[in-house]
Length: 292
Image 1 (cartoon, rainbow, N blue to C red):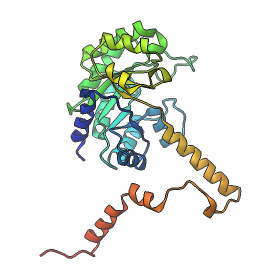
Image 2: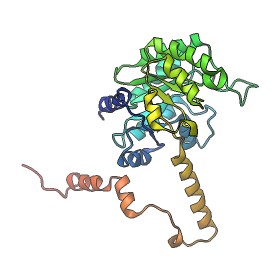
Image 3: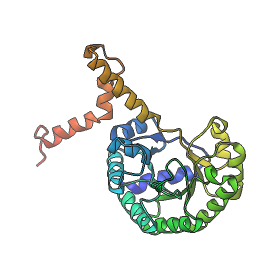
């Protein structure tokens, strides 16, 4: 797998002038669909990893090993550059370094490290608390130290807008930018005034964790340095609903032939790359002519 080529393509997004919406993916077939549909990159979130691997809510019970293994499964299925949410790096700064090493080996094109206190401390469920700027800087430095391939993109992520507003966000953005990270991932930006304040304060490419209606203008986002803007993780939520409704219909007695909305044979062949496998069967299992 040519991981570096994918990372180069992702860096081209950062160096460009457009804002892209990544395709939210959770497994190999989802990644292939996103690639076939023309998405410039994929996004594999920690919350979706917890749902897909464990069937658990996003409470930081998924391990780095489990997350990296799923990222590798996604990456080896095609050629889609993959951005991943590495949460808090699964521990302190030393854990962050290890996280970058594992995810780089798994083939990701870009990853984010955030400054949220995770998992939630005892008695603080439902609240968001940030580590100190100094500890956040240490995590960013450790992430950069863990990187072996210089084309891997490392983004510093902060939820400071939700906790301390624009002033706190700018202070953290500037501190993380000074470490040498490649981009900044902002969570909780709700207004143009908030985004404008950060964009005026730092020169790094920006990622947005969501695009509320006030920000749903890609031309405006691109002009403010936003290169990646998430749209949530609807594909996996739609998959949950589809599986639930199909199983319920079957359990309630609906004949399989009357179930609607399933993948056609042509779509299934395409997303499983059946033609490629058929060719390999022919070439490797004795049905192809042998050269002398």
